Image (cartoon, rainbow, N blue to C red; front, side, top):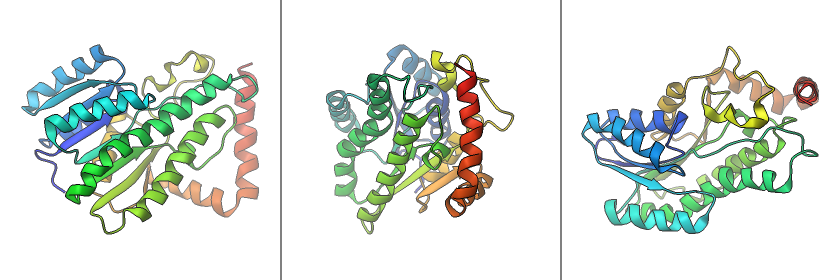
Length: 264
């Protein structure tokens, strides 16, 4: 798929990976739909995109609210008739043990990270099916493959995203519609600005830039693969964990549990 004049919808588009992804697609001549909760931040991103002479639509929407997603989809489809690439990027984490987190805090992560993706897919998939083309890119995390102490509820939401995507990929066989999950390691964004992370070191030396992940998302929108892990070398760690879980899981568990205990 060439991206010139295609319609790209990006959730969580007001900053970080979402903003960087909007810029990367705009460089290719795509029309961009920016979706997030904060309209003022979305408008700043839209201003940045003006230099590319493309059509941009700002949609204030909390993807965890299915009624808001339904209304947003009506606005988008009335303007563009279709979405060629749906990038489900909105997501966040709250750091803390399951014992310490409230049920509301755990639910809120699943509502945005997982159900937000579901709501968007359910509202835009019919138009993709009718024209027999399109691609869904779900932005997960390496946490979709590793259950880690301190972010168990976040991991659960990303495990769910990956499992749902795999099942849906089978259902979409021969429809002309693709689905690919992008799973990066730590990314330097506002993700860690949540107060629950205040006692943690923000970034490791191996953390990625938003631009690196955004370029992978563009690649994913044309990929037949189920999952692209960023950087690719980390796929080896996922293979090791799945092949030798009795060896890898205790090492990871001990390391992350030590970090969790140190924040209390």
